[in-house]
Image (tube, rainbow, N blue to C red; front, side, top):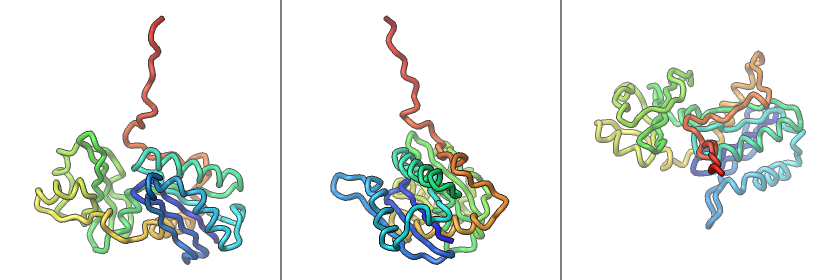
Amino acid sequence: MKTLVFDTCLNKTYVNLSEDEKTLKSTIIENKEEKYHSAFLISSIVSLLREYHLKIKDIDVFGVNIGPGSFTGIRACLTVARVFAQQVNKPLIGVSTMEILAGLNPSSKNALIILDARRKQVYTALYSADSKELIAPKLINIDEIDSLPLADSFIISETSIQPIIKEKGFESLNFLETDKDLGMILSKIVNNKAKIKEKDYFWAKVKPLYLQTPPVSATCKLPKS
């Protein structure tokens, strides 16, 4: 089984190709000059497939990060994934940013994810050490962080959230400072989910995980004539 996954929701683009759960190649793309990393998604996929003499029809399963994260990044990778899966009628598996980041947990504790959502809010979710979802991804006010199980969890956050957690007496892993390949984590999750045959991974059912209202969805009122 050949699996192609990609992610443009965070600070880098990840593209991973695997066969029978073994990674053939994993690519990480960072911003280049004034170009945002997601601009290189299609060319990176084309280059990867060409290197292994493959076409989109040769891929058995597609996987993609559905957010939360950059609204532009979510739209970019999910649109590409849905087009590919639709064209060749293959399964598409969506995975949240929070579940992917939980894969950075090296401990036996639950993984508590806390990410900056701006507007004095954070995204959060909780996963067991064996990747079971204990608290689904949600949006809370930043002053509600105290209500989270900080003391009993391995906390994964980012640069803007780390000081807040430290003020409360806890340490956290800043995912932005790790060199871990999130594409490989995404690939592992997708391959595991693909084994659950009773699941319906029809491409049209995979939706973006917008925990906040995207700015482009705001209603535009026309001036009265």
